[in-house]
Image (cartoon, rainbow, N blue to C red; front, side):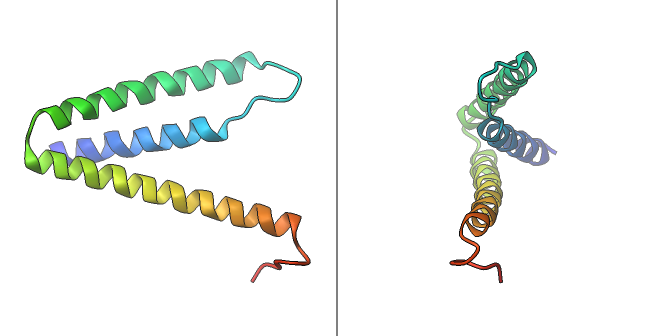
Length: 101
């Protein structure tokens, strides 16, 4: 049960960090909703980071390995998702050079 909770904490933190990277401000305007949303995501992500820091400080090898594996797999999914969006964006800007397969 503890392992599943650690995986959920790590993956949720990675997802919130990804969302923080993708939410952008509109040009020439400050949307209070965007500001509040980004601040809320940051607060939750920080709390989750502190939680998994406490798990690492517990000095349980099994929990530590699950923590590292969960963070690594979460980052793998995010990097894969980022690579897909970059590839789609480059196809749109260079349709004649890099047509989609």
